[in-house]
Length: 267
Image (cartoon, rainbow, N blue to C red; front, side, top):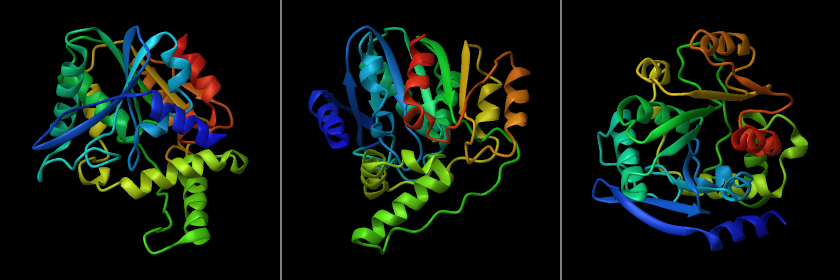
């Protein structure tokens, strides 16, 4: 069943490329209507949005790039910093949309990139939505992960399951075949580490220059937030935004609580 959805999304997507230094930034898109750009998380791909694309694309043109060095996209040129990555993605958006107005949604690492786009390349951008946002200069506890590099077969699958439980998904029952397939594909294709360019204040600094409608979503049990959710709520309230905290969900809230996230994004 889960493979059916991923195969269907791959088969129905329009695939295109924009420049990424001398390489390429790979895009997938679905649907028609006002554009909605989705930026995935670290060590991810457009597949982070697997449970959101079809509901959102019923009334929107949904575009999802694989960020540089992740998924099918090439590595950024050596020495590219966070503003440089944001500029590459922003240029890709401009090429794809040809001046059309759009809304931007980022998850985790994608939320940091989205914040920098909103701060530095806001032409045509109507709103910014952040899911599982970090890099706010606030306290967080470390989340150590299991190495999968030298594991094979069932041992590798078990390591992916453990990493999903530690970082991404709060309810073990939600770590299904689809979650494991996405995690495995993303891990196998990830060649870039977001920590190379993200510091603890990367998103906080960008948000100082953002003057757009802002929405924020967290899972109640987000591993990069607990036990400091109150700090995040206070941070965004001070900036005029009331975060939506979805009960029971973890960091990958758009997957684990897809119905609630889709309702919030569509509404």
